[in-house]
Amino acid sequence: MKGWTGHILRVDLTDKTFKKESFTEEFARKWVGGRGFASKILFDELKPGIDPLGPENKLVVALGPIAGIPAPNTGKVVVAAKSPLTGFYGDGNLGSHVSSQLRKAGYDAMIIEGAADKPTYLNIEDDKVEFLDAAGMWGKGTYFSNEWVYKKHGRNAGVLNIGQAGENKVLFAVIRSLEGRAGGRPGIGAVMGSKLLKAIVVKGTKPIPQADPELMKKLGVEGLKKAHDLDQKSGWSRQSTTAVLAWCNEVNGLPVRNMRETSHPEAWKVDGERLDAARVKTYGCPSCTMRCGITIHDDEGRESELDYENIGMLGPNVNVFDLKKVGSLNYLCDDYGLDTISAGAVLGFYADAIERGAAKGDFRFGDADRGKTLLWDIASRKGETGNLLADGALKAAKVFGKNSADYAMQVKGLEMAAYNCKSIPGQALAFGVAAIGGHHREAWIITFELKHSKRESYGPEKAAKVIELQRIRGGLFEMLVACRFPWVEVGYELENYPKFFNAVTGLDWTLDDFWTAADRGYAMIKLHYLREFPDATRKDDYPPAVWFDKANADTDGPQKGVVLEYDKYDSLLQYYYDQRGYDRRGIPTLETLKKLGLEAEAAEVSKTAKLN
Ligand code: PTT
Ligand code: SF4
Image (cartoon, rainbow, N blue to C red; front, top):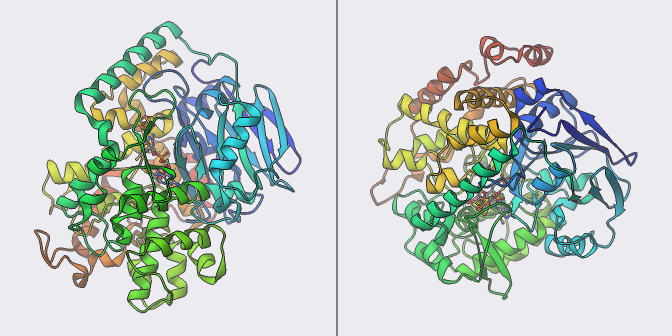
């Protein structure tokens, strides 16, 4: 087998043992890597109903056949587990040297099971695995612990680590890497914390097996140059993702005040122009020539790296329009290892619930200083409020009652990213049917919808576009494990990716082969969902009720009075199901599962749930 190393590292924290396992070429071709590997492994190895924060949950770190090979932008890693936030398969994607180091150590993935009996970190160097004492960094933030590891193991090591939020099992704790950013929004950091695993350090020295290394080298060098040139020409990385903020404000898609409003006159104060002007440094993930990370000094003089989602959710969504204060909230999320999107959504929800009389407390929209202390309360689960909010907006809403779940801005328990879609039906659908809950990673249809389609349409073309984008973004990029930005942001052609894949594997895949693999991956995650929730219904694929509520419509501007319409959303959902070959609950039919080669998985799920 070429392209894949053919090996998975299995580590048992309970027994402090590890072994190198092999997988077949058939497995590799069927599941490709990254999200494909993780979803299949977790389906096979986890019993339904297990406690996501118990030792029986497993953490998977998964790479793909081009991960770690110099080519546009291959320094990414997928982290996955059963999510404590949503109760089924969850994953995330972050930049890290772990991508190349783990592959050079001889593995395409790592499965971490059991739980340590004291704070531990793993040190992996080629075939060696050490279970080391993490007492020196337990209780500390991610900046401290990442540096602590660097001091001991050198700056060339790949490092994944958690902050206090992961240690305290906050349900939206992420995994961090100073070489990239943060990943695993649905609480994958909490799973790591539940295993008393503070960090994973990886170094490798072996060559990654490739069918045609010369060709891959040529394609990779050309690709990196092309991505760089396209970026320079377009000027995208000047503001990077934050260019979207001014646009979202203009088109009434910005999350303001827990997504009650869609734009704000002060939004310009936290937009990409202001960020670029305040830039202190530029960062990038490994193997990247586009380097889109922008840092500024926050109001306490610390360096904080901001992207659009971080600003949108910790700024306008909580009514904070001071970039330095947003930087401060973001810095704390990064240090504690809290997901910025969920943190902003939870703070916005809490302020809203207080304002609407469902909750008691002293937090108000716009109060960044109290926001900062609340983030610590959440990360440390301090007090009744911190402990409750640490479980995410939906679980908090169940305690607050008074219909507050209607404005807990989440889907399937995962808080939605920074797009206010009460008048944007296609993007609302994209959140509704995203594989792991309210994530924009899967299908970011909003630009197509607003620039090239009819905004008000609930037609089948939007369902088709959501599927097309899911195949590319949630499929190809999550399975190959590469950053999607060269394609999304600067127009680097998609056709390059099968070329890379074929050069390393010696296979002859076209994009269509990737779409089949992507559909299989989506169906697999749906089977996870049904196995955990046998009573799944199409209502699970609806965004929050407040987006359908006339009382919540914009009171002026071009979208005045517009909200989502139930009947139309329901037929849009049906277009999506029909085009995907799913039943009326949004579950793949037996015929679809058969077409995708998932008969065995279907038989397994049929033991406890109904398939049609
Ligand atoms: C992703 C989500 C995003 S998406 C952002 S900003 W974005 C937030 N980043 C966080 C952060 O930072 N710190 C923190 N404590 N929490 C954070 N949570 C949020 O996580 C880096 C980039 C970005 S910036 C995006 S869109 C793209 N995401 C990719 C992806 O998902 N897959 C892929 N193949 N390529 C991608 N390229 C881009 O990478 P999750 P990231 Mg990761 C500091 O985490 O769970 O996948 O959720 O995210 O490493 O920050 O992404 O405007
Ligand atoms: Fe990382 Fe940005 Fe480069 Fe993507 S474009 S690899 S997110 S630095």
